[in-house]
Image 1 (cartoon, rainbow, N blue to C red):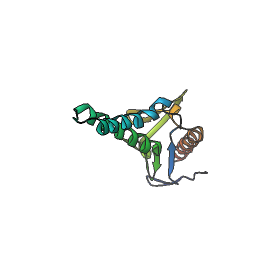
Image 2 (image 1 turned 135 degrees about the horizontal axis):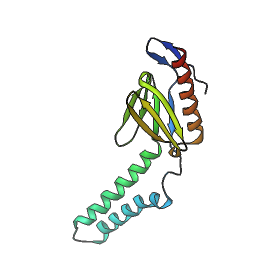
Image 3 (image 1 turned 45 degrees about the vertical axis):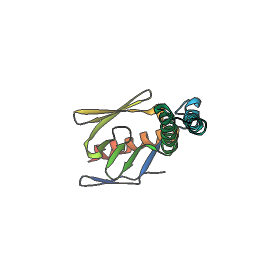
Image 4 (image 1 turned 90 degrees about the vertical axis):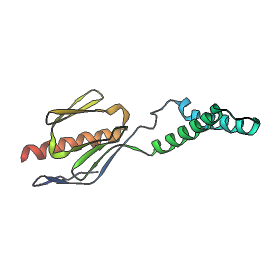
Amino acid sequence: MALELHFKGHFYFFFMINIKFKNARYKLGTYWAGPFFLLLGISYFVTEQVYHWNHYAYLFLGVGTTLFLIFDKQADYMTIDNDQIIIYGLLTKSVSLKDISSFEINGDNLKILKNSKEINIDLSLITEASKTELVSFLEELKQVKSNN
């Protein structure tokens, strides 16, 4: 997708970009852990007469892990929307495009310098198509900032 950046005051207008995770993010055993614990918890409730705390824990762990993997498979690593970059995770970070001073790529690590702070992005977690799209967007952003 070709991006067009137009500089008007302090705002950049462009298409929304979703940076996707790689599919092979988790080991194969991780995908079986949720259903395994779910079946283990259900089997305790079917076969036992007295329920212990660990029976509930297996059920909770199975449901939680299964739902986490289902929702996490659909998640984006980061989104570039309006005038900011949003990096999703346990602590979601947001960076305004006008605050980005520079960026540098070292192997599979992208370092975005924002005034006096830096944000590190692990490029090995995202797909190759998303990686090239992100780098080309940042190059275009650098050209727009240098022209103005």
